[in-house]
Length: 103
Image (cartoon, rainbow, N blue to C red; front, side):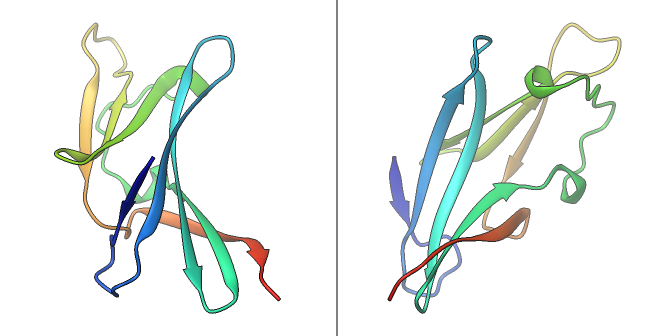
């Protein structure tokens, strides 16, 4: 779990590295507050350049956040043994949805 101001607005976002399913699928989830609304953000693969990505399912990519590296996506490249890697900074590659409203 990390707290970091990703967009420079002075409010820190909550960044979680999440691992789930029997295969150990790894995803990053970011929570941010805007007024009385909590938003959850996930990396949008349509906003990233991932040459040769073989999107065969949940395990075709692994997302992590690290304070030194930022957001890192390793993904299966069609016909290759070694994964491709994309590094993401900031929040432009995220899609945001409402998680909760505070009263």
